[in-house]
Structures are given as structure tokens and as C-alpha cells.
Length: 569
Image (tube, rainbow, N blue to C red; front, side):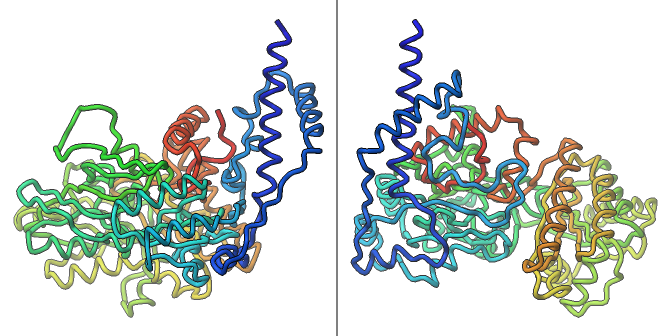
């Protein structure tokens, strides 16, 4: 009875080492200044390094040794390092503090380059500058040792499907690319491969005014979409950073300042069309406003960060442009007082559309960047919508609440241009911060807690931030318990990077201890993977990995993101 079990274990272990030896001949580490794709394009040959048959006895010996020293253990299921998946990555596991994402990759086959040229024509490039641009996010300190080998610009869903089929056949990794405004390394290409830039797929395919929904391609920006919708009296209510595209917003499950009234991306997408890892195109639902049919594939894809497929079409829920609105501002002596007013406002039942908190350092940055003279103290910004009478009534109620919590200088604006200017200041807060340290980079926290714990979390965090030698600002979507800290640091100073990481680590673990999350709206990417086991538990992460393995068995879809590398099943 023992021999079949031993032989099965022997065979399994042998196969793993066999694959590891075979893959080691073609998978190797590359640095950013290596440009294998260009060499291939110029007609160079792929070096095919065959492994010697003399290694077979070594594999057998190692197999036997692994059994002798590790009986009862299956490396393929329990040890990420034992698998032959060169796309697993080494950054993001629990406890890691690395900020540069390493990766392993194989040379892109000439055959794949020729196939992509046939599909995309002139809409692809091997140019180093273009590839480098796509390998470094615009507003993120995250970096990778590699950049994409090829960048393609599909014009249709059919082209995306064919591109994915080719990459899957050659087992070359894919990174979908939208507006490049994400902050956690989502669009890095640590394993090289193919970057699929969706910027040419930006059309409005259908607008259903009476149903208040719109069907769009993923490359359209939310700001451009709202310009298109305005003449119809409609708008899409999510408002992340300028430049974000609908596809990327779906992929990261983003939200924004209006989420307190309209919900997140999860609540505003009716259905999707997605190209899976084998090139199949799946539509996740109907256009009905609600459905109880089958698994909720739409919500599965939203927030999957390109690890399950490439989004090619999105049907969005729209809202009527409010009839009237009032924007108000109020000052406070501490961030705790401001947070308490935000909580009290939500508990009062008032349907505010925005509640934003800025600390005194952030207000100072806004004054410098915009030539303003705002009082440099913690500040709350509100927006009330509805009829004129209802908006005024809400404003007066909140003014009373603020006065009961040490609020002062309560002012409000009704003029359209004045309101637009106030929200423009808030939207450009990230860029304003860099006026405080123009040559620095920003590490941005994104914790979110149950609303009742917001005041406590901000107070504890603010004590750490104020005691730090780094410049730190606080911005909060105070109505839903989500706040950001912008930690400015010099990337060339190791002590700065360690301090920024320490502060971020402190806030994340404080939020998790309050039943919160490490990311309210920015997503996981590579930067937040290390916190997921504490937030979800290992079984939830194993379930995620099983889903990934079924939908993307070759692990080509944005590999090394979202699921920590130490998770196995």
C-alpha cells in the first residue's frame, strides 16, 4: 500500500523539478535597459538553450531527496516558490517592504510579434520610449525592473480577443492599460510582455435616455463622458482623479467624493463585456436595473484589476443632473472635531452628496498652489443637492451641527462658477501638495473604516503624522469613512522611504484593527498585497486564487498583482 503512494509522490515531485529545469533554460531575469523585443524585431534569433539529458539523474536524485525530507507535503499546492510559474513575482507577500517590483520573463517570440502586427497593423510599437512610458505609472512611486516588450492599441473588441488568444498561446503576460492614474502599481509590467493600451476604444456605443443608462467602450474618460451627457440632463456620478478612464475605474472598483451619495463603481455598473485569458468574450449580464439570475459575474470582474480579463464594454447607470446645489465650507480647531461633524451629519439623515475633510497642511498647500488665502486649519467641505428650498434647509441644519462641534467661519456658495472653483481646488489637491516639496514623490494611504471609527483613526494617525519629519497631508471622504494621507518623501533617501512606509503601515494596521480595509478606493495592485491576509484571512485569498486559476490557467492576465505571491492551495 505504501509503494503506490511513494511512487505517486515521486512522480509528482519529479515533474515539478523537470519543469523547473526546463523553464530555467528560457526564463531569466531582465533589467529595464534590456530590450529583447527590439532585437527580435530587427531579426535576431531567440537563443534556445536546451537542457542536457545528463540532468535527468540529478532530477531523480533531487526528487527522492525532496520526498525523504518532506514526506506528506505537496509543493505544487503548498509552496508558491516550488511552482514553475515564472510570473508569480517576489514583491507583495506579507511582511515585505520592497518598493521595486522584480520579475522574471522569457523573450517574446518573433512569431508573436508577427501575429500582433497582423492584428494591429500600425497600432503597435516596440519603441523604447513608448514602452518605458507605459511601464511607469504617472502618479505612483511604485516601479518595476522591467517594462513592456510590446505596446498594442486595439480598436475593437475583436482585436482585443485576438491579441489575448495569441498571448495565451505563447504564454506571454498581458497588462491592460487605461488612463494610468492608478496609484498602487496596477499597470507595471514586471515580467515584460504585452501592454494593451485601451485609449483608442473610447466611443459611446449607445445612450438610453429614458432608461438612464449608457453603453461605452473602456477607454473613454469619466470627464469626457459627462461632457457628452450634459446636453441630455444626465451625468455619471463617480469622480476619481482627472484622467481616469471607465475601464480602469471598473478594474480598480474606484469611487470618489460623490460615493457618499451614489455609491462606488460596484453600484453604478449594470453589466460588462470581458475578454478572458483564452480570448473568449463574456457578457456578464443584461441591461435590466436588477436581476437575480445566476452568479454576479459583473461584481466579480469589477475590482479584479485586469487579473481575470480585459474589459471591452461597460453599461453604466446614470443620474439626473441635480436641479440645484449649495457648496459650504467650515473651519475647525482639530481634525477630530471636523470628523465628528461629518459623522453627526450622516446620522442626521441629511442626504449630502459630498463631505470632504482637509487638514491644515493640505489647506496650506492649496493656498500656495492656487494663490488662495484660506484659513490654514482643518476644514470640511459639503455639497447639498435637491430643490433650492431643500438645499438651503440642509445647509442650515449642518451649520447648526457644526456650531455644536466648535465649527467656525461657516460659508456657502450658490453661484455656479464659485462652486466649480471650490471643487476644482479639492480635485487638484494631489498636485497642490507637491508645491510643499516639488522634487519629492508621494506615498498615498487609502484606508477606510466604519464611519463611527473615523474620528478615532484620523486622530491617532494625525499624531503620528505630525511627529514625523516628513511632510504629510490629510484628505478624507469623511462621509463614508475613507481618508487619504499624502506622505511626501525623497526617493533618493533611504530613511525617507522607510519613514513613509512606517507611517503607511501604521495607518493600515490601525484601520484593520477597527474592522476597516487597507484600501477604500485605490485598489491593491502591488502596493497593498502584503495587507490582504490580515484583512481577509488565508482561506479567502485561496478562494480568489482558485478563481484566478480557472479563468486564467496560464496566469497571463496582469500577473503578480492583487493576490499575494505566498498564497497557494
